[in-house]
Image 1 (cartoon, rainbow, N blue to C red):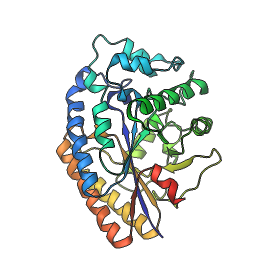
Image 2: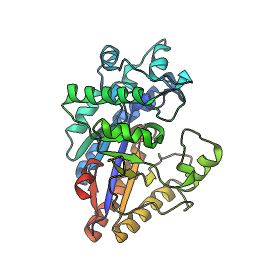
Image 3: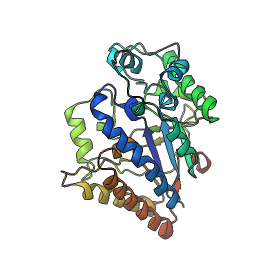
Length: 317
């Protein structure tokens, strides 16, 4: 029985942080991410790693003009406008395009073996925020698929929900729009209702990276759910290296231990992160990733563990 390592990446740059972090103070961070991404791809290629790059459709645009061309007419009517990428963009005095548009990086991903371009919606759409509705979400997905098809010839089939806001009515729309796989959340209570965050949930999610506070992170090979989408729950977020943290190595060791248990049980382990997480201390973060991938190679040789992107799991049902 094979075991599987799935890797999915939330590829978003500032589209995933506009409602939390001012852009002007984060430019060096995104430059670090742009430095790290080609090196990340090189590590994937060296180790035969398959991965899904769930890409915000807006990031695929060359500039503001092209972005506005592909933006859907129906835009999210959030009760709180701060959640809207369009509202944020229009409120900016100055736009730093290097933090928002990266079609050349999409091409680099496509040029690396075994990499899948997935979707992270067009506008980093929040399906569980008040005010928005299903038809606005549908329009966003259609825009994401159109820019990918028009610019890169890609038919996108895998989706990652921004901020992990997964709900089942949205999964039905995802299926209707032709997506085949979606990343969903762990069963632990502190991963539920991610649009309603609080300190206790965050503390438990952080603590669980060091010691086991929730359910087993691996799982048997899943089947398509009632919405007709192959749901692939996340197992672990690869958190970024922090120079002042005493727990960097502990977090990496815990991931390796979970991977080893997955390999012994013949189950699935789904590791994810944001490429921009490597923006601070990119070389240290790349060393951490290389250590994990080398561990995978050992598990591949010893247990027959297999690397897959999300779309690749469709052939393993």
